[in-house]
Image 1 (cartoon, rainbow, N blue to C red):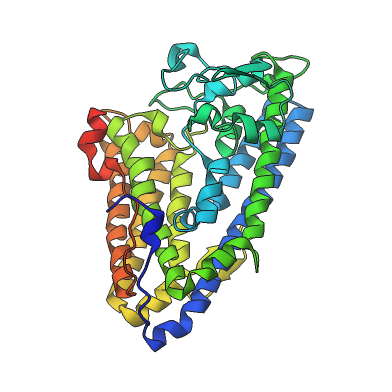
Image 2: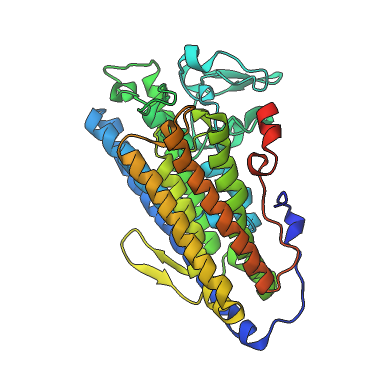
Amino acid sequence: MKAFSTLALAISLASAPAAFAANVSDVLNTYGNIAQATYADSLTTAKVLKTKIEALLKEPTEANLQAAKQAWIDARVPYQQTEAYRFGNAIVDDWEGKVNAWPLDEGLIDYVDAGSYGEESDENGLYAANVIANKQLKVGSSTVDVSNITPELLAETLHEADEVEANVATGYHAIEFLLWGQDLNGTDKGAGKRPATDFSTDNCTGGHCDRRRDYLMAATNLLITDLEEMVGNWQEGGAARQELAAKGEKGGLATMLTGMGSLSYGELAGERIKLGLMLHDPEEEHDCFSDNTHWSHYYDAKSIKNVYLGEYTRVDGSKVSGPSLSDLLKKQAPAVDKQLRAELNSTEAAMQKMVDEAQDGNTFDVLIASGNKAGNQVVQNVVDALTTQTKSIEKAIEALELDKIEIEGSDSLDNPKAVLEG
């Protein structure tokens, strides 16, 4: 596997066999329809999240906080199923960091436990800046007014401030941190335990509850705005559909398989799973405040399967489906199609085992703990399944005569010695 490059999307323009070419436009249309549906569902569930957060802010009870947390978890289900669209679609990749960037230095946003988090970082001058507690920040040589916490402030001033990627001020994970607070359990059981009174104006805990409320509402409104943008991009005639169509039929198929392969291997198997397992580090957990990582990984894998099979089950239970990559492979290379289908199912089963462990309290951070041999194996099985299916994705690329597609790699898989020595 090689590192991902935009230039790697250059593909052969050789003519495809007639039986193959006749169906490609329908496959690409299905791909676009599923994208539109998953982003639309992400928007719908984000709006539900907003209503639950508004209820929490109106009446900061533990019950309302729990309802907001559940709405956040529910919102992750459709969003994670969009992730196979990230790699290969520049319009998605350029946007994705606004809504799903991680890991984050949460001390930028709010109070943290200094004993576990520390008070400063050589790499990030805003490591413990605590926007909620301060109305001015020092960014580089400039003093920045952050007295009014607005969506514009988060997006234009704070997100990746000082050109540090860990300064994540927007998106799902900023909201997650505000709802759960830090997970101080390490690799032991348990998630973050922020009290509802952190949002109370009458019985404030944590200090600066008015600004914490403002931040939570601003981040939620911004998430909705960003999702609205991507829904529009995937509607008929939208910018993402136009970008896909401009690549031609083979270019469109290359985009689909680049997304599947790069999410499967470099991103999911590597950066999101194997890296944390190698380091036994809960800070490498994707949903590290809520301990919802098992479901995020499960639905990432589902995203790959959705694209290949050309089907998606919406949050209302209805289905979006149509001609698929699998249909093309059945004609071109039936043995490859059969193998890849089986491997996608095996990956889902391995993911389900991780989900089942989490229901018993053995969440991802517990499973990757040093010395947890059985838990480590559950996670390694997921990595192995993803790696295996990626090899079949590469076979599909060959069978469809799509040249020069490179799948994103990860040092955790390709050069583990560098990770351990780093």
